[in-house]
Length: 262
Image 1 (cartoon, rainbow, N blue to C red):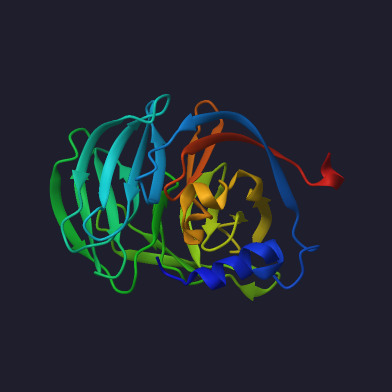
Image 2: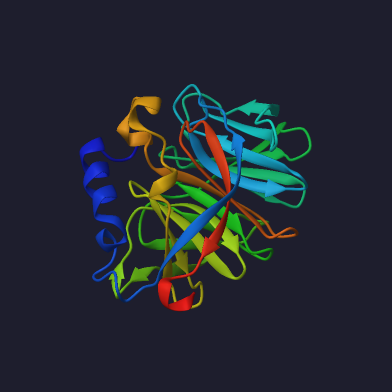
């Protein structure tokens, strides 16, 4: 999806420096795995969030796109709704009693009842849709460009924007989003790292390098899947979860600080 495998391999090898002018200017965080959970290897993960003890995941691919409620411990799908064909499902977020899902290039999204995943409505937007998250007041939407849109959660209309830069350069390929302790965490498509974005300035204030979590290539059979996509945060228990497209595991991780901060 979105970019060829050749570019994936080049960017993944380059690491955070591929997205910024100099790696030294932005601290790079590591991680420790707290727990590994099962993940559906048929789930082409586009969106992920945690709510009230469960994971909610939206998946991509035409004809296979879904929104689903998932048991964290077992990876079992508890509820599921198929995204209408021929739309390609993308990111999702909960707002009050609804679940909102984007599609990639169809310029429309879907609203579902959060409790039942019953479809309720459609809405339109210009450009591509990649990911959604919320800070509790607004929704934030990525579209693959360096600009994150701020949306009114009730009208789903754009009311602002964040221009994201890393070392003064626009950050392309901003993908899955999660609001974590006042920052926007963002997967960067075709890489193995997460950008920590200050929403006030748009600056990347940290990278989280997670290349060590990527499954062996032969387990996935497709190098395009050898990237992270999926960030969820349990604010009540301060738990951070990450996964990737069709990965066999979803990981709870604890961040470790840059060397100078340890």
